[in-house]
Image 1 (tube, rainbow, N blue to C red):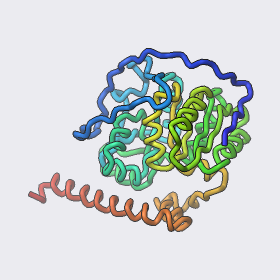
Image 2: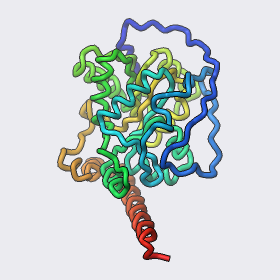
Image 3: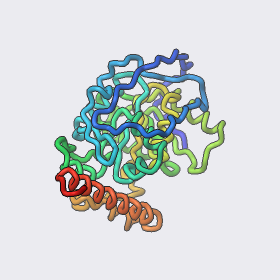
Length: 318
């Protein structure tokens, strides 16, 4: 389903931008990249690439304060600070993307070389999981709080309505993205909806993929909110980010469904004790039990590894 909710927009030709090679600063506290070769990015729909116009971005790696948990460098930001940081990315006028990472993402990062490259290339990585925040307490620079994508979407749209950012909603079942956009526009009058689209769950043809990218690019969004699931959404953003125009892209999982009501978020008591996964698992056991079983196994192994490293530091293990 496509929705051109902003009737004032007129499509214009996309200018060809000469790529500028910008050196990437190292990630503080992050592990060195693995020996996996960097995956080349081949434009699928257009030869146009959008790159950073300058190397002195306010959110360059050299100034980001991160803490590495299970080899993922998380930005030490509160929810309010995260919204401000995303605002800086929007104002930078360049292609960028943000990851909201939970335990499942950490597991995927551990197992998938492509996800690891996505991690290293991200502009921000936010801790969307209470176990990650709790684990960070063992470090000298712990995370201040969990930054849940399902909460951040409201704050982002509120900021977008005040600043005039154009927001595009992509993903979900048929009609979900459009309904989510309209609901948020009701909550935050003045919110400019650049468009919304719910692509089919099957793999798109090359022509469909090219049309999808052109549709988003021509809508000129400042924020592109994606709900493709994990890691499909992160991989899609990483592969196509330079073909979408100077937008800040964020994968937000089930946030659209929570807003529309096609899925129910766990009560606050579950969230407070880090048990939101249990509530969601029981709501959709066939799909989520295998996933959360894998997450639990990864979490157990990671905690055992953390304990072994701690014992070694204490000199109690050869």
